[in-house]
Length: 476
Image (tube, rainbow, N blue to C red; front, side, top):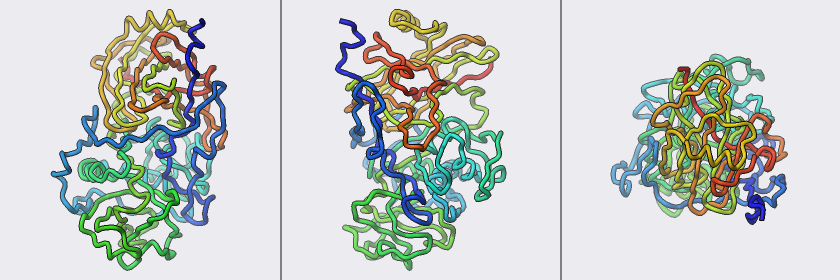
């Protein structure tokens, strides 16, 4: 039997719905509210091998050891105070105003990013540049989500400075370069208060989302204006992104317009200007339906000169997942070294769920159109192999023990083996779902996928996608 067809079939996950619930859209509702329709309801079957359209099972385990990580959870949360306000430590960025555009996703992302650098470094990043990115087909009124902001930041298209691209002028100049390189974004477990608190306390604001009927300054039965307190207990999905910057375990339940089960609330920074809430901040009950269901922390932000070259083929980022119905998968992206001798120093990939184990390495002298025999030979001379385990989903940059030198024009590959407990599609991919959100180009990649590391297939031609697997280099 031809081993290419001995598998029960490729399972192409076209949605990671729980991870994509953030973002506001003026299409779904007037004003700064609204939300992009969930991916699960919009996806179309694009794979020729009977794709499975379902999300991965979300992990509920507590954080253990994360490599690398800026966030470590203290045992039982014992080191965390019962109340914390990042403003008292100068660790919140100034409140901004998105106006009547559907750009809360960009504001929340960059506010959280700015807070992660405070108080040592103070930046004002441009939401205009992020929301006008040419790889996104949605205009500023049509909303977005933080998968888009992750793609923008992790590809080094930003962040750029606000002064270089001011908000609200309807244009975005070309040729701007990122002033920081985002190398790691962790996605914390759902409703894990200790993980959220620890991230706020040790790293910076946590980007999350809630459902709101507020339209700027308008009233809502879920919001008690005099207390700046919000609580929603319904079943509607989130439609607005905010940044968690503190908490109060004893915040009175009576402060909300509707009584939650108990005391306790997160302090959040909004993007509706200082006239909203208490100077732009407000409290959201621990028992709110949506806040804490999606949580991003910008845990790896480095100077823009950390690496000189990024190799990538996933400019629109983590749009789906792929696998063989198993927790294990192998992936490889082949790149051609650009001008000059270079040293490959690190690689980056997405962990699609908690407790992902990885083994990653570099191979050089990759032939054109490699066969299974070629991959077997290449695997035998893998270089600078490094392995580890990641507590959280998210994007991670993994440095190699020693750099690998490549010459101009030389073909090299990053090879990764992933094991994600409970997953059936452990590899993140970029693909065109036909939803009109992102300008996906799969012709810029050369990726290969395998269930066992022996039998490989080309993903661009066989599955119409790119693998999310990057490489980072410096000039030698």
